[in-house]
Amino acid sequence: MISRESLLQNEASFDRLFCDVLTRDKFSIFFNYYFSDDPIFNHANFSGTILESLNYNSSQVQEILKEIVNKTKDFEIPASIYMERFWKNAKNLERDAIECEFMIIEQMHILTKEVRKSTEKPDSGIEVLVTREPELWNNAFIKSFQIPKVWVPELRRRLGSAINDPSTKLLIAKEKERSEASGCLLLHNTPRDCMGVYCVGTIQERRSRGIARAMMAEAELEAERKNCDILLLQTVASDGVTPMYLRMGYEIAFERDVLQYTR
Image 1 (cartoon, one colour):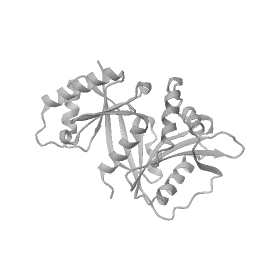
Image 2: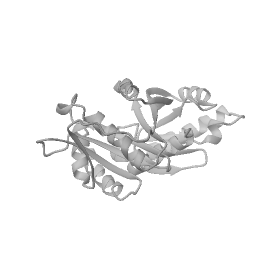
Image 3: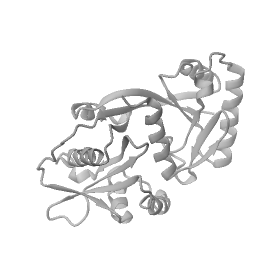
Image 4: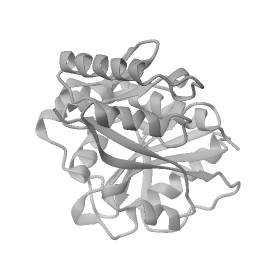
């Protein structure tokens, strides 16, 4: 079974496609000013030495939290923290964060599905293609998630680099008699045995037509072609989509709280 560390590695590698990273001994901050209203792209992670320490020190952690707040002010982004619930000191750190005026604003589910060999592609009448045209993918992404206009130039720049990343593929879904894409999906394969499935979106007027399911089926086939062992998928609890993916055979590998500084 793939390790949690490999799942976290996949997520962090995906985040680097869209963010810059400040790394310190005790924490890292993923940041992008252009996406400053989004706590998912902009967030801090504590190091494993803090999260798994047998000698947890609240005073030290609160000093680190203050440093994170100050650094994020420099970057002009919200101070948000990812906290996976499986860490030994997760509850202690959340308690200290709340004392430092953070609050839990969201929960995330990290889902996984074992890659089964000889997966058959369903005949849905929807064609799912890999594209090297970032604008085609970007248009579907923007319409699917109602992306603010101020994000668009930075998305274009980041996607221009992402298409040259050998671990990344941009997928679009096309319906018959429609020239533009009806949906989008991004695959990120790192480490070798893990295929991350990100940015799964269907434009609003084309929903409930099996488009997301067709793209997810293609993602499984691509994971099989790459000899991956596991598929990874993030969901945000407030979106209410986790049950749909559970019906597709995914399971919750772990849960994460997102805390944000409120002052």
